[in-house]
Length: 321
Image (cartoon, rainbow, N blue to C red; front, top):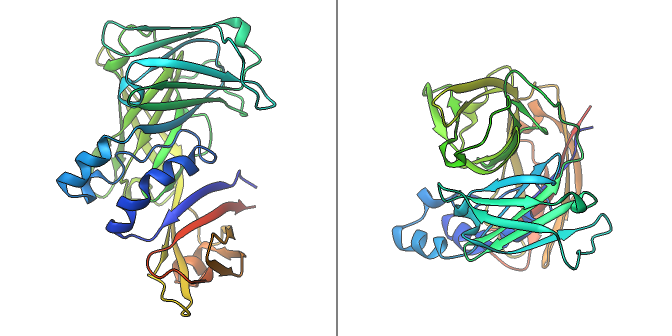
């Protein structure tokens, strides 16, 4: 059974997205690795709404297989880093973490973590523009690769993809010179993503508004990484994704929750476990269906609420072997 992916999801309502977007940042800090949605819906918002959103501090979360050493952070997510906190396995913060921060020649933040922090499992870097949470990955990563690989599973939810790529070793002299893209098989063109942080041969990336067409019929995505010297590293990676939909709910009128899945065979099974939020009642709270049943429109559950309108959803999605 793959690791469950916990997200607070919404129906596709522009008004609702603009209201709850920042709240989703906070939820993602406890769920998916390194997710920020600050730019995820920019194209769906009016200009004045986008300008207001960009003033909101960002929150992102990434995973590396080690926290010790040099970590290059994109200043778009933090600005100049003013505070660094490290956390131990029991969740307690270290009083005086041994961490040094300096700015690179191309304007990125270079965080140097001492060997004395080798027992830390999380690091949070904060600046005026936002916070970046760097977690220690539970998965093992190969020390050397000849083409990009993913540190964890690749799952696309509501067009959002956040993952860490393991790439062939490259001396990092200009972190701003890295670029990342994913091929849209339907349009036959690459969609650019963002690079959040880099550590040794690991590159934490995220993409927004990805269409299902980035996953081919065999459940693969094609990624291309451009390095500062102008060379490209490409690879096909296993991936899948899903979207959840719920109509605006009226008081006393339960609305069905449905989904669309892509990148998995029709006989694959997914387990959805819902948690009813305040003023909600979702029944049943757990449902397992095949991809074929899901994509035919079989409801996962029904939601009743005393608060009318678009509804947020708290859900764990697991792929069942």
